[in-house]
Amino acid sequence: MLAPLPPCALEIRGLVKRFERPAVDGLDLAVRAGEFYALLGPNGAGKTTTLRMIAGLTRPDAGAIHVAGIDALADPVAAKRVMAWISDEPMIYDKLTPREYLEFVAGLWGVEPALAEMRAQELLDWLDLAAHADERCEGFSKDMRQKVALAGALVHEPQVIILDEPLTGLDAGSARQVKNVLRERVRAGGAIISWKSPNAWPTASASLRTAGSSPRARSRSCTARRGRMADDAGAAGGGVATLEDAFLALVAAPAAA
Ligand SMILES: Nc1ncnc2c1ncn2[C@@H]1O[C@H](COP(=O)(O)OP(=O)(O)OP(=O)(O)O)[C@@H](O)[C@H]1O
Ligand SMILES: [Mg+2]
Image (tube, rainbow, N blue to C red; front, side, top):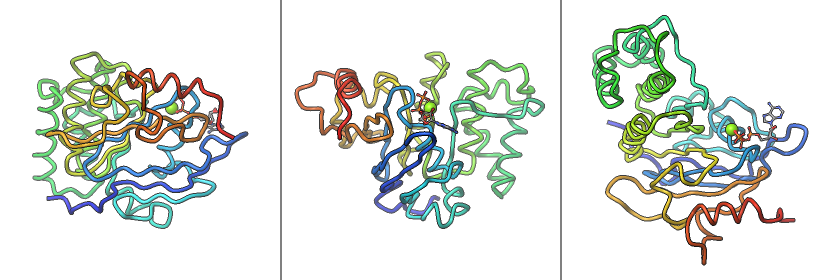
């Protein structure tokens, strides 16, 4: 049983990262408990940089990050324990089978073996990998590899899931399986997902104003552009027909001073 989350699964304040120029430029956002938060933005908007800072892979120049109430910059190890990071180019060990890989990852997290085995089987079933659970990953398609990586990221039952374009390259069937698993998991925690297109995540597709309750999970979105928030969860959504229209209008608009 997971510990109850504080009201914010994830909170970011004044986040800054500069390379040759600012990649993330004073970003504020909050993902509530039980919420799916879509970070939308075109190429170079700063999505991956933001998510890498949350995951503890890139050190911010300024700002604060709290994951499930833990100060991720002061105590990165504790923050990593409660989160999962799934990159857009996930790595798995080709010489292992999915079952061996999940056992290995669960061992790294110190999950008790019988519990790890049960969770692994559940994830393998959910992601339709059970028939291949004892084959080496080296011959797997991109879809299957991505699903194995996702299972590995979820086997320690993280409360906060951070995903960088996790559906890239997945066929429709695999994308649905991944979305179903994530929806199920996000009810007990929170998730932030990045995407270049507002249409890729149907739960956020009807309108920018998607906050509210549904039997599955609440979802909300914001649009980032050139390292800044162009719109947080619908401030610019009025009078715009669809999320796609709003997104395109936001990324085309001149930058705020
Ligand atoms: N390690 C790095 N060194 C230098 N510049 C970087 C580095 N990582 C990112 N950048 C720059 O920061 C900006 C934001 O990049 P980032 O990868 O975060 O954008 P993104 O929104 O994820 O884009 P994409 O949709 O292409 O994945 C870009 O201008 C990029 O070139
Ligand atoms: Mg990226």
